[in-house]
Amino acid sequence: MPYIPLEDHLPGITGLLEYRVDTAAPIRALTQCLLRGPSTLTEGERELIATIVSHRNECKFCSYAHTAAANTLLEEENTTAEITKDITTASVSDKMKALLIIASQVQVSGKNVTGESVQQAKDAGATDIEIHDTVLIAALFCLYNRYVDGLATVTPVDPGFYKGLGQRLKEHGYNRLPQGYDHLKKTNL
Amino acid sequence: MPYIPLEDHLPGITGLLEYRVDTAAPIRALTQCLLRGPSTLTEGERELIATIVSHRNECKFCSYAHTAAANTLLEEENTTAEITKDITTASVSDKMKALLIIASQVQVSGKNVTGESVQQAKDAGATDIEIHDTVLIAALFCLYNRYVDGLATVTPVDPGFYKGLGQRLKEHGYNRLPQGYDHLKKTNL
Image (cartoon, rainbow over all chains, first blue to last red; front, side, top):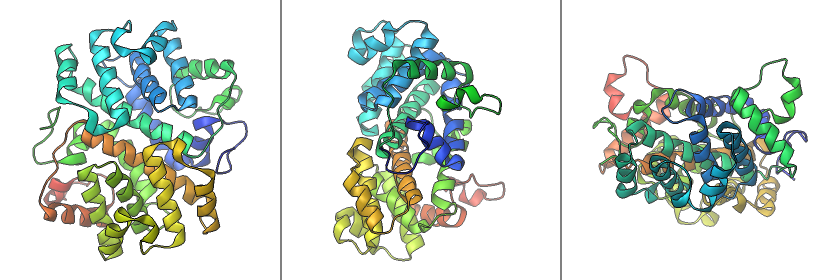
């Protein structure tokens, strides 16, 4: 049961984003910019960064949600399963391996990122902005995971919930849904 | 030396906020809302939450900057020194002790926040929104600390730098400085 009164039909982050809409607005804007804005990383690749960080922070809601979003965007379910098992053997490019390793270092502490891991990413073709965005996306999900678990929000057990949420995140991104999308309100991330 | 090209005269977070201004805008907005917006917690109290999290994440730039901001707002330097040593014996209210303990739990993991620590805060008079904001401020500084250290930004050693930055954060908050404040550009947080 959440530590503060949240709407029963809005689990995980969704209830928090409705609890205080003035703080939710810049959180949504930052996420939309980083995960859906113009980038040389695909939306699926950026969702993999969200997934690995949420998985390592053991935040079930975020982990399930972004696994579903990545699976929907990538149109397959193997890559998310592989990266959470072992980044180095996953079926992703060498650049993505290096960026996912940097994200995993950020998950523990910013200080854990090494010059070597950054150089490895650069050697594999990562640009400065891709490295910047990887660190900031990883840091943002360290915020999300703590926000969601720190207030003991509810984690649905129905896999269908996350499938719907993943679809919503693919089709509508992280902006607040406008009027007329009431049928999606239960996943109003 | 930072892992990506940042302006030499902008250390710590300040260079990152100029590196990508479209992601910086919502980060600034969220921080301004949480740390300077209407709240039953004083600005000094909210800076104490930023300080304890940055201190425990061992992010020197953020720790020095928010210690300076808190000192300036509180008009004394004892409280920041006391809370980083031992929250339970610091000269703050029982409510602030409980909130700082929650923030310290969030610093480690959202899962570390316990029903007992939340109840202790409520028993000491903390409202739901104060508990919400404490968790979100702590989570936000887990983002900042990782962003600043994950890209190996520069940490000035001159205490005068942080004193100036603390004054700037008291007087102008977290919004981007408008034109005409060029004399503050070196601390354009």
